[in-house]
Amino acid sequence: MSSFRRWISERASKDRENLRLFVVGAFIFFFGLSMIVFANQLLVASVQQEIIVLFGLVITAAGGLCAAAGYISLSIFRIIRIMDKK
Image 1 (spheres, rainbow, N blue to C red):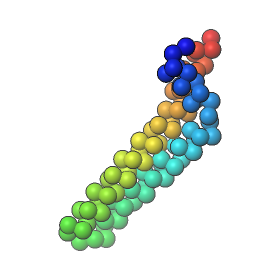
Image 2: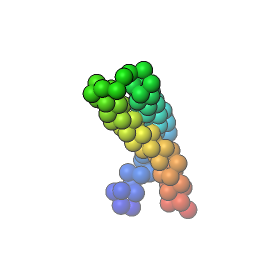
Image 3: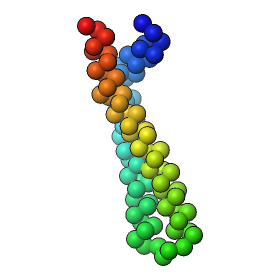
């Protein structure tokens, strides 16, 4: 078994960590999204507003990546692990 498949198998067996990564990523994603909505709805058009929106976009992207990694670990890696056992 290659080291990559071994890593996938080990990662797929860590359900709690994968779920935690997904939930934390989703929380960070929605926090960043709320920053963007807040800045667009409540602040007047200015450089400060744009900086807050940019910061919210970076936070949203980071949260989305974490949530996607957690989701992939929960679903696809588990399917690969099950297929390897057969």
